[in-house]
Figure 1 (spheres, rainbow, N blue to C red):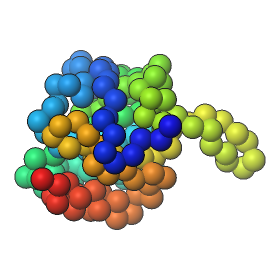
Figure 2 (cartoon, rainbow, N blue to C red):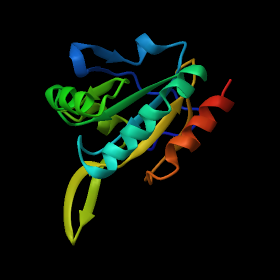
Figure 3 (cartoon, rainbow, N blue to C red):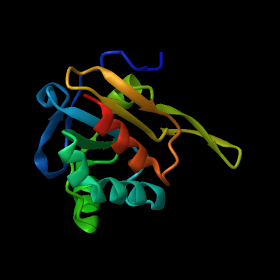
Figure 4 (cartoon, helix red, strand yellow):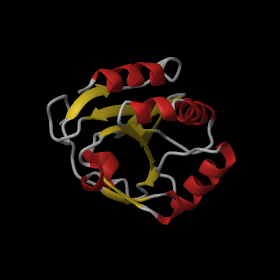
Length: 155
């Protein structure tokens, strides 16, 4: 069942880059931008991460914390963050259980070949842990600015 605005965001606790644990419960009281991306250090994912990073001060001023999630390992996340100077947390879901819970681990198709992968998706979660907005099948250009505007408008 797809997650929709008004739904409670499913709780999660995942390992993050730098040895931290990232959990929804520990972030309660903050607006959260939870973005799901397919793979570290690929062109679209790198651009999306760099765009979120470039707006990190604006997201902080809006009271929002940005968290990226992919099925890559913590080691991969550590390298990705270091290579591009990313300042926000990246959570690792190698088991794909949280990705499945959030409905972003889906069947994809490229050149006629079907495979399972992450559908680029962003959620804006309010201070009480409810989903305020969902962006499905995200296209990277202009996306971060749209998410920032929504975070700024959210009480």
